[in-house]
Length: 421
Image (cartoon, rainbow, N blue to C red; front, side, top):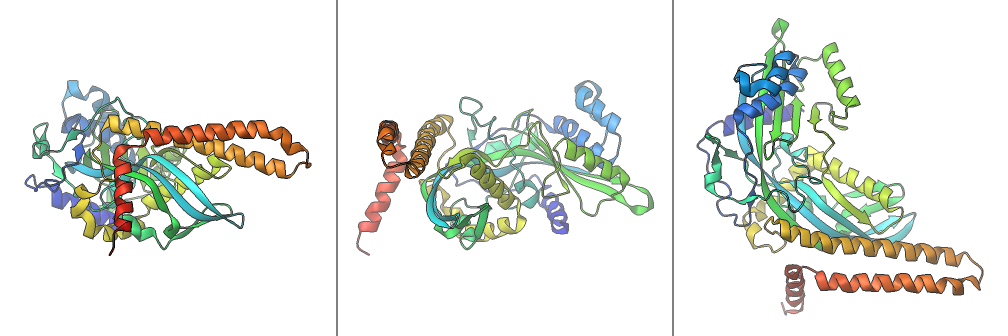
């Protein structure tokens, strides 16, 4: 935890200057959400939560939050420093296969994950939460990010700092290959057996205001917290990290108890708060081919979230990413964030989810048939054949709607495999 505090200090020192270079200059596929509001609005939004954590002028900050535009900027708690910056992230869709042991039987499981949020930087405070609502803000037909340009480094009359990409969504995952996990009771998997059936990663930049608050208390002690906000829309989430060496007494215990009641406190970090209307997820939706699918999928996504929030894992992913960070434009699995492209991919993947459901029903009927008398299976042939017809129709529809770029990628890989070495 102390390391996180040092990282926060280093970030402010590194990015407090307005004259930082553009780290994305050669990344053609990159898109960025513009800042939706300026620094004064950010202070008003973040100050309310900073006041609650630091026990400082809560009433004044509440007035600033709701009446700030009419009263000026000097109401409520003020940050020691504030930095507007772009944080890199990936929005991914994936269909995977993995060899597992389930109830002591070897199986191959299909996994589908849609709207996955992956941090693009290993800066641990900002990387530990999904900064955008992948179930809401990123739905096709809503706002569209813009092609990145150096001109976006100045918005609302302020210079915008930029965190570089340090996490590669494909090469970096090599850090997990030796991991073995039990994501669900009696379901074990070695991650080196996981292979892609389909994967796409879309790089985006998320506008963020990052602010440090320090309140001096008696006897030389102080309360400190870092607050940051998704500035891509006025409904963006606000988050806070309380410094581990901050003063902590009965007041803070009461704050934590209230935060737990309102589901604001992180389940695995007692210093991390997420002030959002609903807890945002790292994985938007998905399914698995094993039964019970909902329970296994929920356990899987919980494991994914805990893994991303683990700072040691993120550090290892960053180490494995270093050699590939300059090659991101050349990989066809890395694509421009485009709402129409995402919508077409979503339709195609939904057919895959439906096909998985039909397959689970067929397998369940097969299990029941084996337990019946010998003459009973004849009466089950009609529904089984009907379901098999549905499965075939879904497979044909999937083949028809399969993204053309993915077909080209698979064909190219096959040609490379056949070519003499």
